[in-house]
Image (cartoon, rainbow, N blue to C red; front, side, top):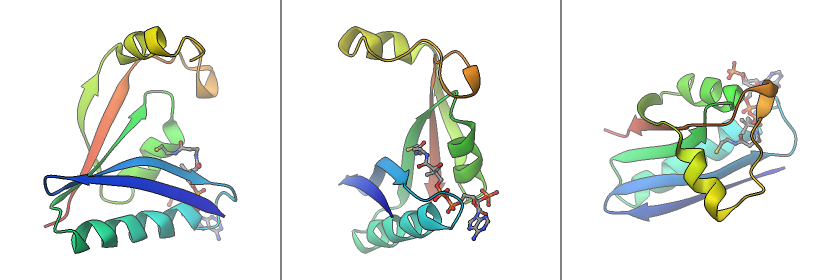
Length: 108
Ligand SMILES: CC(C)(COP(=O)(O)OP(=O)(O)OC[C@H]1O[C@@H](n2cnc3c(N)ncnc32)[C@H](O)[C@@H]1OP(=O)(O)O)[C@@H](O)C(=O)NCCC(=O)NCCS
């Protein structure tokens, strides 16, 4: 029904991908809880994720679950497009796709 991938490095856990194939049924909430549980098991004190400025659903989702915005990498998509030119100029909700937004949850 969904998939979460993450990596652990130096007591920090980064969510690499979080996808729900059946939205608005609590799938991603459960996957996020499982990732947080794993992060705690590995002794992490920080859970973090990067999303893009157009992904209002993800920004809402994470902020409602204890994450806060900690960094905005403005124009980061320019660099990403150098490596992956197929990244579109216009993203979700017809919002220009430009910036990366970092969110984190303190696990203490
Ligand atoms: C963002 C994303 C992961 C959310 O997945 P999801 O499975 O729909 O998430 P949930 O169902 O757990 O929660 C989403 C909303 O549905 C609501 N919801 C959960 N169960 C529900 C139910 N049974 N009935 C109605 N609404 C429900 C939740 O309350 C939540 O709303 P809220 O944030 O206002 O509380 C999903 O939209 C997605 O896969 N997006 C594409 C990939 C992506 O952007 N990933 C994140 C960046 S890494």
